[in-house]
Image (cartoon, rainbow, N blue to C red):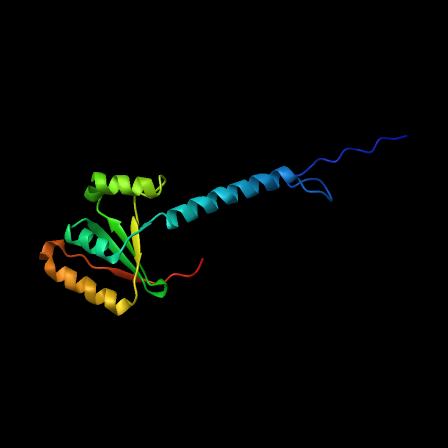
Amino acid sequence: MADKPRQKKNFMGGPGRSNYQVWVIVVLIASVLGFTYLSNSNSAKEITDKQFEEMLLRNDVQFVLLIKNKDMVEVTLKEEALQNAKYRIDLENTNPFNNQAGPHYKFRIVDTKIFVDNFNRIQEQLPEEQRIGYKVEERSDF
C-alpha cells in the first residue's frame, strides 16, 4: 500500500478544514480592540450641568463638545485641573483606564438652544482670557 503524500497546511488550515487556532487569535484580538475602543469612548464620567458650570467658572475646562443628535455634552479638562486631587481621584474611581486626553466628563442636555444660552450666560461671567468656545458634532450610533 502506498502512502499518500502529505499536504502542507496553509495559514488558514488545510484543504476542506480550517485552523481553529487562527480564528481564536483573531477573535481575541478583535475583542481587545473592541474593549479598548468602548472603554475610551464611554470612559467619561456622567455629571450634572451644575457641576459643569462650576468647572467652567473655576477655569478647569479646556474643551467642550456638543453632540447635537445625542443631546450630550463632553467636557475635557485642562492639564492643570487633572493634577487637582479632586478630579484625579474622581476619574480614577470611575475608570482606572481613563483616557487622559479626554473627554473626562459628560452630561445630558434637554435642548441644544437651552445649553447654548446657558453656556453663553456663564461665559459672560468670566474674564475675556478665560472664555472658551465649544464645538458642535453629530455622531452615528456606531
